[in-house]
Image 1 (cartoon, rainbow, N blue to C red):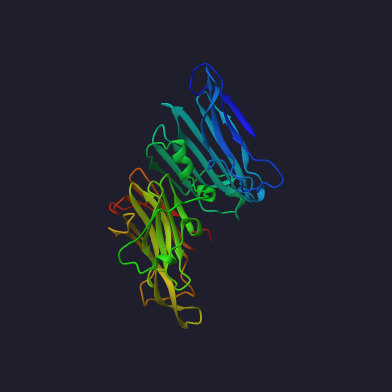
Image 2 (spheres, rainbow, N blue to C red):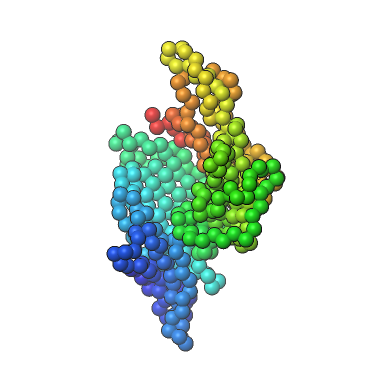
Length: 371
């Protein structure tokens, strides 16, 4: 469906990068598109350099906008995949891959999200310099005079790890779990302290996948017989599955699951009984999320450490409101550093950065309340 010509291996002959799409009325819209490169060869014409089914959005991944595909662009030894979609809220993606040392590596990326012409979230990664830029602002769509403003509420930098090769980039992309068709399991382990019958374990493709990279899949599942949630780690290199953590009555839900340099990171809700006092001054007991905690552990469930806590109420506290705000964490881990956003409904959202062990916590800033 698309090709660009370039001489990426610098041998004086034309090479090609292209995208292959299955056609036909019976082909589902979600069928993967194949990104590939053909290198010229003096002996045999052309040889297949790589192919990947994770990196190009399918026809149904553009939202109301429709097919999100935007044609490839190319430089002398680079090519860029492009996509655009959404509806009133729109997003764009551009990922540039460079050929060096006989392989393809992610070189630069630029993604945006926003309402119409107003960009509310922007990321720019430059793996040549090792620097990533993050820009955020509140989604103030009720004030059109702000739509053309270049000012962001948050503008900060992160250190990038070494550039991923094209296979790593494809498997790390957040949409790659949708391409999974098989996760063969040779061994299953249940971590110490987890009370679960092996017959009740849900396999990766039947669970809720939160994270995937070139080796690790993190997903959660629950059992029909109880309200317990479980966090499982599947490792592709050994086709091994470990049920690594389980929820408790106090911490019932998993959030922000990531893997980084041999460790698993995840957040959990902390619930407690509080008393909510509305405008009529009547106090009503309520079991609510009063905090979130960030943890890390080994893939086998051992070595669990609490890294960070964000709390909005204490157990038994009386709150002069009819409800507590919704609480959620999101994480980015790069350059041996955790970047943590705490979403607090109806309040400013704080951003923090910290070391991998939770030490040296620094506040980046706040994303203002949208109300």
